[in-house]
Length: 415
Image (cartoon, rainbow, N blue to C red; front, side):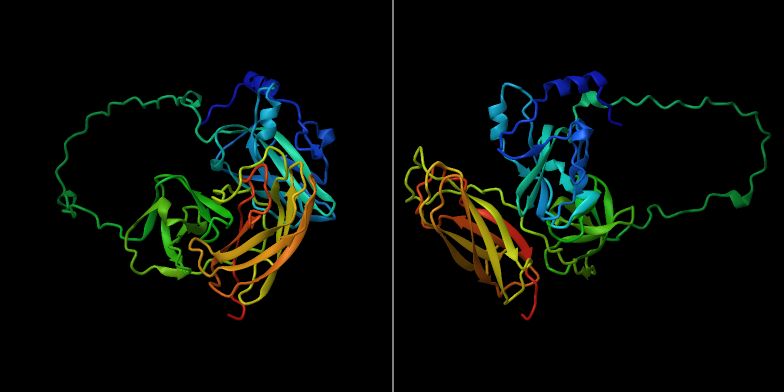
């Protein structure tokens, strides 16, 4: 059993939390006061000053007439009130998958807190609308997946019942029926297929981390194997003690028993979801790129959207890409390259390039391209985008715009 935080520690924690900062230049709602909560856009759970671990459902409401998509982000919270500049530089990381439909007092997404380091964090609900993004910020939230040993409660030793001496009984004649019967020295071994978790593991609705988490298998616990994925990913389809069924990755479990006649289980199709606004993936700049100037443009990805999503084999889809200039100089013209290929191997690559006119400092531009993917249907594809593919723009930061990744499962269609 986990020990609860004493009340005075919670008060101290609240005193250490800095006031709401408008460092992002966005309209932010900080729901510390119930009177300030917007009934149409809010996070109702977890509340401020709450301890979370493992995976939790984030609840709330997003009910706007012109909503495009929304998702929840998180980042570490700087509790030193003198370090507001440090807090402003902390990047946001996605906590949940994006959704497109309105939610009223329901689940906004599931946050796997194992992706965050232990300590204080803040959450931000980002809602993309036709009038621009809106935000709801919530803090502090404490992530504690590895509590220190001094918060563990020591369980009292079990009381042993006193032994009561039974009155002596008169000896009885032995009964032949009570004679010991020879039993086999060892019971037959259980050869049924099963997995044993090597670490605390998620069980998902399908054979990919893009699927929703439906359960958990704790380290050292076992579950019955019902089959393996028909897609050849080697994920096991298991049944937990609770009766919940789902897929688990083969690298985080140990399989035991007779695995020779496992059924082939077809995972469900991923529900169509909008592509999340990606976090830039730093990659090495090409050797010929010039040194970054002290002043000038800085290009980063904004919203990325596929139509339709997911794509269908041999049918052209459109990808809309917004690029922002966060620098202090005009960008000049440039191109974005889009690459659609099979996840993991990069095979079956289909590409297109999207041209952009100059973008003034502080502004953004949207453009679109079209791609036709005709290989590897019913498999996960990556859509990788590279900004300024020909190094036409000398940017102040060349490391924050060279990659963005989205994913989907290619529908078979007419292939």
